[in-house]
Image (cartoon, rainbow, N blue to C red; front, side):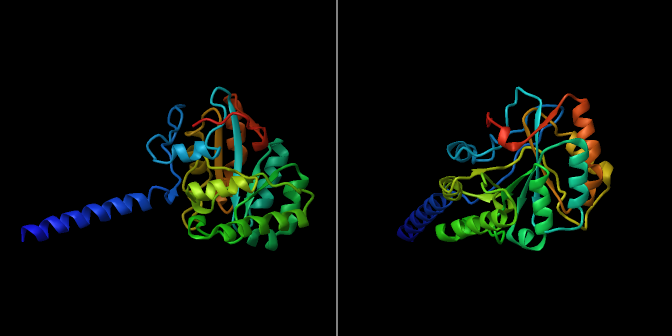
Length: 257
């Protein structure tokens, strides 16, 4: 019996050791401690800070400057992007739209408008998979197809930024994306805005975003949200009233972790 217990303990030890090794490279689901009362957000407790730094990914910009970077995830069109583009044009605010292959195929006229009006288009993968579960060749194909589709639709030929679908990543996927010429972009301001069945009104969206503002913020909004669309103009005006300036993501030169 004693030998059995010792053997069982050894097996459990080895199993735990194997699990730790297998999970050392993730997958990680991006998350962060939100900013409150102007304090900076944090990824110190998330377990992947060194992975982002190693791969030169974006979490925060220069936290000594009151600059904001507006980013949208566009997996599919829900009828709100034209209004979003109208507001950005009226307010003279640059943004980046991370697009899936479905979006590029389904709404080429909106993709063209994004580029024509001075916004960046980023890569959100062709089919929105968990990148940690696909091979290197599949990952490259996911990125290449989006880039080719956008360059074949618009005058934007380069594509420098990628946002991992669902915020799932590991060291391999970030490193491979980087080798393909991409900077991986995460975020430092976000809220649950993607559920089209749980929209709570423009005031809710406005308050959620404004409560998290901080210098160097990368703001994530989903374009399928009615709340975001209706609150966007107020968010821009409110941020500017606090002394913030909206910058294009390709102007982000200082990365903070």
